[in-house]
Structures are given as structure tokens and as C-alpha cells.
Image 1 (cartoon, rainbow, N blue to C red):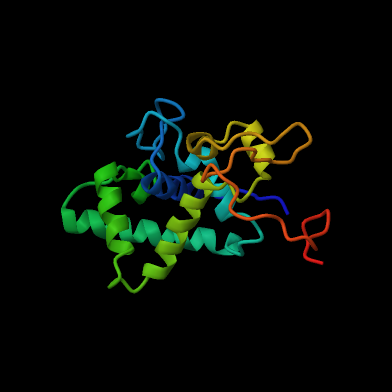
Image 2 (cartoon, rainbow, N blue to C red):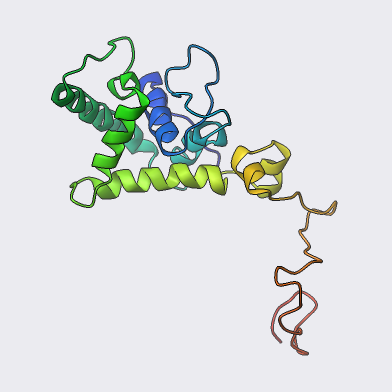
Length: 188
């Protein structure tokens, strides 16, 4: 099942701004409003956070417009309480600066907030997009230079597509293979 992106551009930039708040990244262009640009390296947006959120297997596709709307409603309330104006040219959450976005996300993910589970879940999926690329086959993600997997130092598979680890993490074999283990690694 292929991931799609939301049809509504306002939903897209709002959710990108949320993802960028969770794992910040570099702006894609000077006029990029969704990404605050507080980092010099790619973040959750470039890692495919929207593709993860919109992936049919996750089951959130139909809810993304509503989630973006709710996030923008919270951003408007946050701006009212903080007494600062929002740029009407972009959705309210996108109009917040990075510090205000961060403060709002902290509020929404606070254990006392009634919507905490929703926003914590969305934040978790944005993080997963960066650190594990669940929406892509691992070899393909590495071939594309996935920012999170590259940062983690995950190496490419051997030419046959398999990963082998001739050096063990403890620098010694921890156990011998059981004598009844099949050639495929299954117990006999």
C-alpha cells in the first residue's frame, strides 16, 4: 500500500509544521513556512513524516484534515492567550514561530491534556519517520539517503540485499548455534 499526502494544502503544511516541531530540519527553500529552519540538517519532514501519517496501513488518512483543523484551532487559542497576531496567509499553526509551536506541542502532549494521546501518537509517528523510515523498505530508504537512517549510521546491505554482521557488538560470539537449527535459522 502506497502512502499518499493530504489533498488539502493547508492540512499538508500544518502537519509538516507539527512534524518539524518534533524533529526540526532545514528549510527546503527560503520561503518555506512549514519548516522553521532551526536546524541545518534534514528533519522529520524530509524523512517522510507526512508519508507515514498518510499511509493507509496506519489508518489515519481520513482523520488528517480534522487533526490539522484541531491543531490550527489550538494555535489560534494559543495566539489569543499569548496576545500575538498570526499571519492570515498561512494556517494558524504554521504562522506560529518555532518557540510558540514548541510550547503548544508541549501543552498538547502534557499528561493532563485531554487530547494528549492523539498528539503524542502523531509525534511518535513523526519521530518514527525520522529514525526508522517505516514507510519505506530499508534498503530503498538507504539508497535514497534517508536522513534519519543516515544519521544513525545504518549501513547498506551486502550486494545480495542481506545484512551480515561479521563483527559482533560485544566483540565475541555470545552463543553457538543450536545443533538442531535449520539452514534458514529455524529451530528444528
